[in-house]
Length: 247
Ligand SMILES: [Ca+2]
Ligand SMILES: [Ca+2]
Image (cartoon, rainbow, N blue to C red; front, side, top):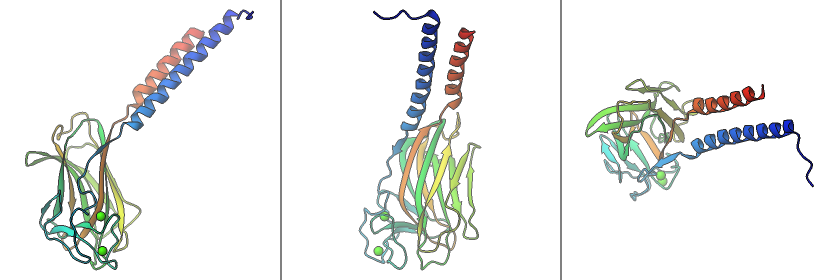
């Protein structure tokens, strides 16, 4: 026969179980937020769809990408650069060169977009400048953007947005050596009502006047802005209820 539990003990157990349930809910919520990152497909993300001979390049041709100005696909010689995938990288040779791809993704509110691109230069080029952008287009009109860029005169990576929503760019700790590729990350956190809401998200890889930048392995993903405040409130509310019942 089971010994009869004292009423006070019963209440303690009940409270313990409730606390555990609330803690579990909190953990589940946090895990769900972390697991919901979605990938936006970038076609020919490594620029290896076009076959180019060693040391050769295409002018204005990057499969699945649009090229404006002096850009294309290049297969650098081993002395000039080592691509992070395959034989090829994309290049953008002057201030007006833009290699871009429309993703077909409609910009979402309260979302964190993360663009990563391996960026660098060929050793034969004596300077390094580049810019990576996420822009939204309403037809042909640019409606919103976030960007990160590196100027050849310093290690600073500058970020900016059109409409005041936050964005951040980050690249290593300084200017990489010529002939190397290093991963650059651009993060764009949209607000509740970004000006580009619902417009087509496009990736842009841009050169700088007098310099040539090279790019490899572009990746884009997004995750909803987490709402830790509501989870915390739920937890605090539940705990307050328990404490009140205990008194
Ligand atoms: Ca090569
Ligand atoms: Ca490649």
